[in-house]
Length: 230
Ligand code: GLN
Image (spheres, rainbow, N blue to C red):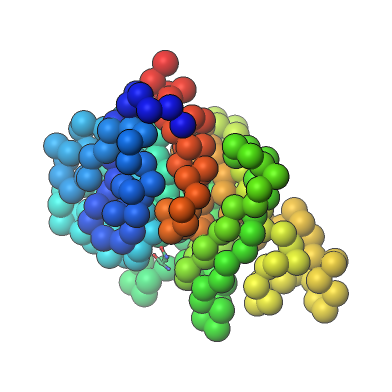
């Protein structure tokens, strides 16, 4: 990635893995840790980190950030990782009892903690065509990750581009659709989708910021942020 700082990227810093995103982006772009509406106004794009979606939403409400974030999403690129991906979802299943607030912006339905309670965390190597050095796999770290249930773009929405899938054979046992022969698992099952782009928005159900590999950060800057500034 180039050393010139061509963009200012905000990282929502209310709760969760915001410091790790900051490290991954350091020296590549200007960074603002977003805790107030004034912070958000300085940003060309935003990352919503992993953490706990219900807590992030509650703190965003207390900071008066929920509506400004929804407005921001209508104009500028946003990347949600894990809890951030839940917040960007249009609808979520297995939401916290009593419901939970979402920002929306991405035409997808996800299931919170969708890999089931017994398998809460796992790592899986992902082969991703859109990344630099695509033959080198990217280690996906999934921690109480959401699962993609369906894509629901309306004719007016930007189309959704699938950026990365979990190989069907690596789906956690609880999510295999065809049993018992895993070779029969449908590779087009939406549950295999772990990274996707819709217009300038980007969603990963795993945590690229928890690895030393910066290729997903580079992808967001190159494919979502810089084109939006032209
Ligand atoms: N399960 C968490 C939630 O509901 C997300 C976990 C994560 O971000 N690692 O927000």
